[in-house]
Length: 463
Image (cartoon, rainbow, N blue to C red; front, top):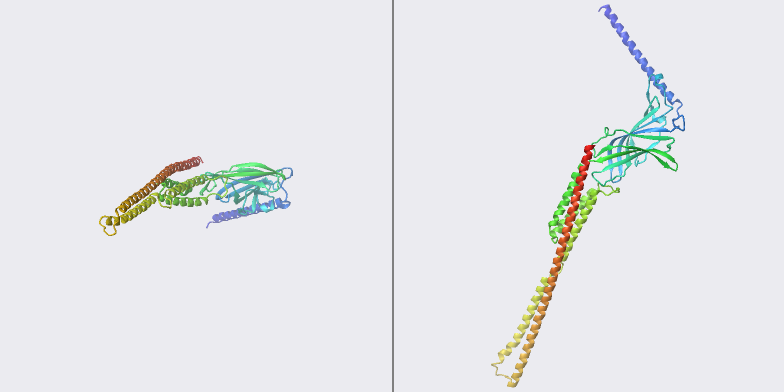
């Protein structure tokens, strides 16, 4: 190998070693500067004192809320579970430095437990929030402290389910200090664009997160509050397929039962089955509705009205069957049995009279033994005529009584028939009225659902 090449190689190797050693020295110097800066910042720091040099000046805490996902909306217990990312920023006047004097270090990370932090809580919190423990905060050279922490918040929310399942809910998260008044700690709310980080693959979609600042006055002082209103909207497609369309089918089948005669026993059976179906359907629907909502859901109102009309129609059919088919002998049957008894009694009396008249007819002309005298025969003939006339009179009276009874029975039967006809006319009119009301309710129900669907679709397109 030539001598010049060896010399060049040695020079390059020495250059690389010199560069590496200088970089290591610079890195060690920067690291030592960071340690010195951290020790200097926390040397005489008191975390129990609000970090201001002028005690009359309030510390402003800036709040940024990012909604990551809506995990659960508990309609029965009126609770909302959300996954949020909360960022708190405030200025600590005792944690400032000149970055040019510290190798250009503009930001350092410190332990949260080693510095002062505001006592901010969520007023609507109803359960222990699950949050990832991040022990560090970032502090820049101007003293701005930035504390970021993800949280899973379970908060109380007043759900308005009148338009379920096309409902839009607004749930608030109110941040306020526990002890510090607005003269000591003030709040400033800022809502960023949450739609970019929101997980919109669940039942709910995020519309907006507007913020509002207010001051709450109490007997102990005035406290600053920062409210974030989480506006979410339900995706109703699942409920339309599994709840609303089957309910319309159920109402349509119930409407078809009005074409059965009101006095038909099959209609009572059919209506009873429909009532059971309504009951099962309503029980399943109640599992999705809150126990104490601000307003009654519209679908629940329609179901209650339809069940009331179904019960009225069923009661009308039962009443008609009871009135038109009583549990006793019908008037025709009573009349027929009475007429049969009357004819059999008249035949018996005629046979009895004929049997008494037969011996006299046999013995009168040809009898030689014990024959009466002529005067006695005349007397006996006269008595026989009177007896015959009395027998005929009794028979005529019996026939007249039977005719009067038949006439009264026929009048009663005619009266019952007219009453049955009046009941039938009234029942058909009531049944027609119930059908019209029922059809109107079903039509209003379908039109309302269609209007809600159109409104939701238009809002979806605008969003």
